[in-house]
Length: 449
Ligand code: GLU
Image (tube, rainbow, N blue to C red):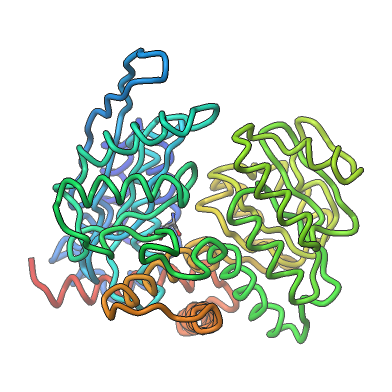
C-alpha cells in the first residue's frame, strides 16, 4: 500500500474505531482502488483528496419525537449524511430500522456516493434514516413518525440540494407521508425533492421493481460474457422485500428460477421457483403484514422451511444477497464456493463481511459483482424519476425499463473496462470502484478546494 493511503487508512481506523460498518466500507474501498491510486498518488496527496473523499461533507443528527396510539411519547434518533456533492445534489435513501446509527448511515452514504457516480447521471451521494422500528406500528403511528422526521429534515433537502428516497423500512407509504409534510412545510409542490413517490403524484413507473430488475440486468451481462443466459438457472436470494421481489420477477421473465427466500426467522426452499404471479403477490402481502417472517410462505405453498438458517447452503447457479449488510460470513462464503455457485451478484449494500468477500473474489470459479454496481437499479430509476418530474412528464413502463436496462449495461461496461485498464482481469468489484473513484476525483479536482 502506498504511504499516503496507509496514512489516511490509519487515521480513519483511529478516528472511527467505534463505527465498524463505516470503517469496513471505506477500508475495503481503499483496497480496491489501490491500483488506480498508485499512478496519481502525489497529486491526490497534494490536494489531500482521499481525506475529503472518505469523510462526509455534512452529517446531520436530530431527535424525532412522536406519540404512539396510547398517547405515550417516544424519541427516535434521526440522521442524514450529505456525503459528497461533487457530481450533483446529494441523493440517497432513508432507512427506518432499529440498527440505524451514525456508522450505518455513513456506510450507506459512502456506498451511495460511488454507486451514484457509476450511473453516469448527475447525482451526488447521501443517506439517512432513524432507529425507528416500523414493525407492528399502526398506520397512524407511521404517519406521525414520518411527519416528525420531515419536520426536522425539511430545511436541509430540496431538488437541487438533497433528494431522499426509500430503503429498508421506508417504502411508498412512508415516502407519501414524508412528501406530504415536506409540501406543507415548504409551501411548494417540489416534486423532485423526494423520489420513490406514488404513481398518482409524480412517482416513476418501475421504481418499486427497480433494485431487483437492475441486478438481474447486470447479471444478464455477466452471463452473456460466458456465453450463457438466465434460462434454466437457479438463484438463491435472501430477504423477501422489494429487492428480492424484483429479482424473482425479472429472473422469471428471463427464464430463471429463484428457489430461496429468507427472513430473520430462516429460509424457504421452493424447488419450482418463485415464478408465478400468486407467489409474487404473496411476497407483497407478507411484506405489508409487517411481521417480518418468511415461514408463512412455506405453509402457503407447501415447501420446506429451515428455521434459523441462511439460504447460502443451497446449491444453485447464482447467489443474490438482497437482505442487509454483513449477512454473509466466512462460513457462508465457504458454502457458496463449495456448492460451485458460479455467480455472486450483490443487490443489497455490503452484504458480505470483509473476509467473506475476499474469499469469494479470490475464488477462481466464482464471478463476483459488488453492490455499488449491480445494486444500483433503485437509484437509477430515482434519477429517472427526477428527470420526469423536471420535464413534467411521465414515461411508460417500457420506456423506464429500457432506460434502466441500458444504464445497468453501461455500469457493467465501465466496470469491466476499468478492471481491464488496470490489469485486474475480470474483477468487476475493483473495476467499478475504480471507475467511480476516477469520476468523483476528477469532478472534485475540477471544482477546486
Ligand atoms: N436505498 C436506495 C438505493 O441504494 C435508494 C437510493 C435512491 O433512490 O436515492 O438504491
